[in-house]
Length: 344
Image (spheres, rainbow, N blue to C red):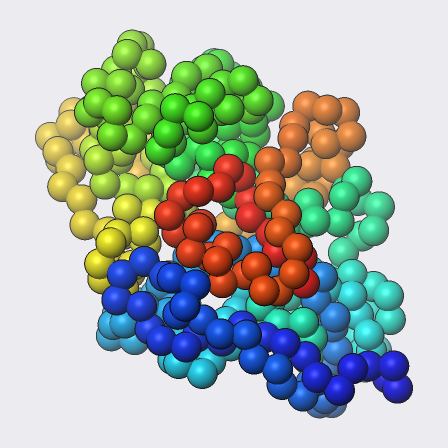
């Protein structure tokens, strides 16, 4: 403990944004290095994942929306998010020791004091690269094995296919037996990367033409499974192109989270209920947190697939806590491909 610095830097909310977050809505603050209370683990954070879902915690009006599992933050509050760090000290009986790597949700700061019960110890050898523990593939894996089940030959449509979840979901769907995988994205460059790097069979591009027309061309025989991160026009299109007995799993609502106005906590969409009825479409909202056993199963399978080259982990690694505010701004604007990580 004597080698600890006297201070630690953290990212705080400076002003609640009224639209998409800007780097100037945040500030880097130097605070005393946290002193762990009884039962706490002191952690030196190594890496934090930058997620668009943070919008739902920081926007003006977020505190007025009920039923959202993300706590609203106020100016002066430190941001939170999933992080990977190294244990500096741990209470006896916690099963943790200095040098262990752990996952927790007090990211966006260099040092964190976290209750031992809220830390997940990571196996150093399970994955070939430590930052892969912050991949969002486990959400996609749980959704495609618990939320729905991929059947051999299924045609699968993944929305926001170049994002943290989508860039893993298409690969996972194929490995689970899908016959055709289609993704949506926001640019021709990303569409090319989906098909050339991640094995997507086709990609539809937001804004290039009506999504429904592009999806009909990409899936002339219809879709069997939708893994939806977006909602909006893309969910409407999936209903129009769905096979009979299609299965939809909704894991995100980026059409609301990344809307130019509002708190990001609503994502209205108009669906044709006649089509839902006639096609016998099942639609399920899903959180991977409901199936915690999927995480360990995913880590084991992810390690096997990574080492064999059957899957890749698309990600951007930015270095230094000073990069974090702009990284969040650019994630909200759709700049990056794959998971965005900041090394602290």
